Amino acid sequence: DSNTQTQSTWAFIKAIERRRSIEKKINYQDLPTHVRAEEFKEMPWAQNEEELVNRLRRIRALQLETAAKLNEDMREKSMQRIAKRQAKYEEDMMVSEPIERQHLILSQVLKATASSLDAHTAYFTPGEATQFMINVQQRLYGIGAQLRDDINGFSVVKIVEGGPAALGKQLKVKDRIVAVNGEFVVGMDIGDAVDLIRGEAQTPVILTVIRETKNPESTPTEEKLDITILRGEVVLKESRFKSSYEPYGNGVIGYLKLYSFYQDRDSSSATDLEKKKKK
Image: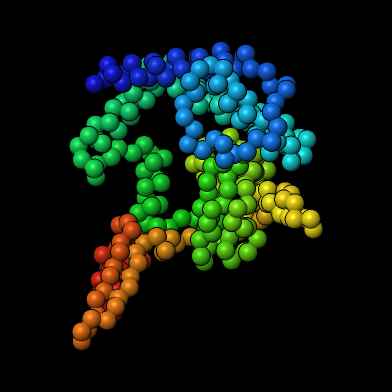
């Protein structure tokens, strides 16, 4: 009910206040070294304040180590942006305006209510609705790369065949994106980073990436590269459906696997499956 949602919101606000008080106790001068992003994957909840402080120090060390690969001016701005984004997120949750808080709580209530109806009902905020339409239409304007948040940047895990990144042949799988058009993205929500990368067709986007290479002694080293990619339409055909067949008697048995429903101006899941069946 609404009372439960209100209590949940206040619990979140108290957690933010506690986080801020802990932040003041942390010594960021003598930070650990050789911190790896992999250690933050699927981490259990911190059991006490000391463990939480140590975790926050290691996260900051990882961010600073990545920022150190940029120039001095960009490095300073990057850390300011991290702090600013955290403050902005906390302010959104701690909004004092009654109407805005009501909207926040109402959004949470609608999400909970919709999800309780059945597995196919959901409530979307405007931003979530936009992302949903991209998934349904299976089209977007960007570079055609799937990313993973590794805390110290966004690693390229896959390059979409036929997309701008694939055609440009400069961006590689395992490249770690740390800035977009000069804006440091380490510490940024992956949705916000993707929004910076996407844009109008035929417009350039400059990605600053860290690429791991090996020197003549086969020792891993890292180099910083600026890669310019011309945005274009990316059609995610490979995630639409898969078809195969095998001979059986005087005919064949066909297999059609639909990964998701979709519809756009040129095609839909229903028409494409029907065409494939006729073949």
